[in-house]
Image (tube, rainbow, N blue to C red; front, side, top):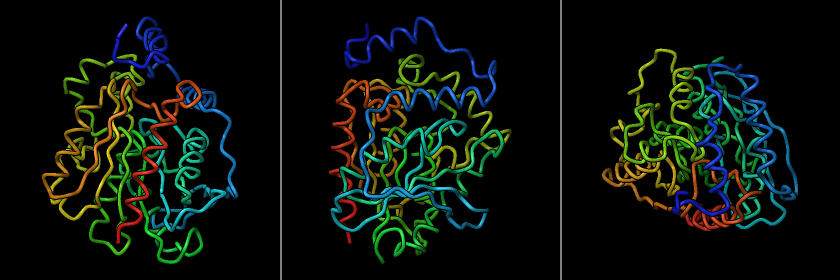
Length: 312
């Protein structure tokens, strides 16, 4: 047993390593999506009650984008979070991350707009990035309807969704719709996957890197993997991007590249908070039903988010 892994996760990690999931090439995308959805709904405790949830359509330059607004029962200041779900660019939807968004809305007292961006393989890169940028612009344009007039916007996401969040933040760094900050839960920062942590935790720790490489192939379909919108570690001229909170997990194959990205932002003078979730694996924020400490970490991130929203 890996003694660094939280005890509540150790058996799941061991089982995954002993009996890996079938390679994604052997199953249809619909089968994979349904399995991901079932697991996500089972892994989260009873959803937090909201004052309101509402299905939305964001008007955007590349076509309408489905979204969902979460309005918490108790407001705690002005602000709006635009959230992008994870799923290796091919999985996930508004329902798989419903529990996460509800918890964040409750903890922060801030309204959240979750974005149902286009996924591969039906819509390869750069469709998801275009939707992410368009969604932030659309949310900015109708802040008075979604939250409050002039409310600051923070982009947030997990895994592939975190990469979309930081891509949007970079693209809008000098735009009137520039976000006030970005919160990134364990972003996947490109298909290279050659760090020490990638080697150490390549299978069984919440994500299988061979499967991730396959999904990158579905996402890119021959397009340039060095594009900074795919691999933000190759980004340049980042000095104007919003300040960031980067959340990493101790036992995540993406840990080292996420630390490197935090360092890259700092190199360009961007203020960064790097928060480490001890004993956690990739995808831990969706594991609230299995590991109460995962909820505690979400709660702590919510406290840091308040500081971003309070910035002038």
